[in-house]
Length: 326
Length: 292
Image (cartoon, rainbow over all chains, first blue to last red; front, side, top):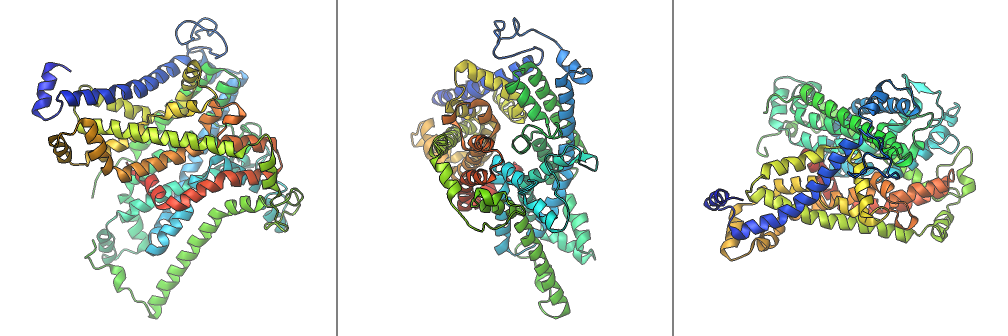
């Protein structure tokens, strides 16, 4: 803080001596702590992906890189794209599964939450918060609990779903265990996980939509009604366009979360069974880093995750760009 | 908005059109109630399953309501020497509460100086903090683990608390909120001779009530339910948090769903009770965090 800064500060009533001490006293530890920790983590994560790294081995002097943890340059990435090793095939499977998962979840989620929010918005005040509270319940439930609940629901012999099917005269379906079952080209096990994930997650978007719908002025809707629009036209021509910023936000957040899914999948399918059909990217990263101790490879996979997330977010922001305010 | 005449107020209550409107409302409510039942069904299934004996739960076709409801599953869990339920609750509480206290303190303080003071490099640092918020945790978890290993914090509750003590989202949220507090209040405090710390404690903090409550509840819920990071950090039995314990226990009792459901109830229900008590705050907090 030079003399010029403090003179400027004092003119605007900013940084006198005591204030400067306070600010420094707070900001420096905060910056060191979060900045240092985060910066170090980012740099280390970025460096790891160019090495073959295992935490047990003794490496070189800087962050344990080098030495027994050799520098391999872009070998990991080359392996990901064209390699035939087991881990590269597993990686490509994981990436594909994650993309399927994310692109299935988004439209299904919107299909459930948007109409539901509209329905809830149009009921009496007394019931609105009660419905909202119940629909939001799965969101605050521990993912492990969700996975176990649904795992039992899907159970071939003990589960409720198959009991209902048996009651209707059908034969039980192996929702989570049969690698041969496919629906619309995607494995049934994946669909089962998607359903459980949707169940846990939809309350979040629904609550956001309800809040957004409440912010739409009645006057605009009434003006449209007076001009002869029916309920559907009011919804699609007035409400939905005004929801665009919220829609963008919800789409981005939903995609982000579904790319990062881990808990429900790991517990429900026992690490990606059957036959790795539910192995998602974060699961792949976790197993490689902490079970097989191949942290360089895992860091490279994590970088791909970061890239995917950034690309998807940027694309969404361009497509759903808000052009006007009301 | 309150003074405009709502079109709905001139809708008929009786007659053909009125009945149609009531039918519409009834249908609406029925749909929503059906949705509620669908949402609650898995909870009910889990809850009922925990009261079924091991012979009943494997019966084909399975019963929905337990025919001879029994507490034997809960007794088994409480009497299991390997499973000290109280310990796991304690661990989860320690971690969640510590992180909440630390985060509220650091976030409000940091949000305060970013909102109300000007200093060199302020924008750069704040942008950096925002940027760290955008990076998915899974990218940072490997180096975070290695850093913890160097510090010797693996397999300790500190390993769960320390990295979470400063929360970029919390700083961001507090900064937004504090910017809305009039600076005149601070100047008044300074005229009255308060130190900057005094201003923080006596002027700013009292104004932050709702924001602190919201951030606190969000953080608490997140830390309580957190799974991936404790899974990575904790390896020994005594230091497990509740979600980790549940996975481990259900793996131990593989295919014994009576016990698994009982354990799940023990882990899930306390959160539901907290939720029922603070529901207004929680839902609002999630919605707000979504907006900002």
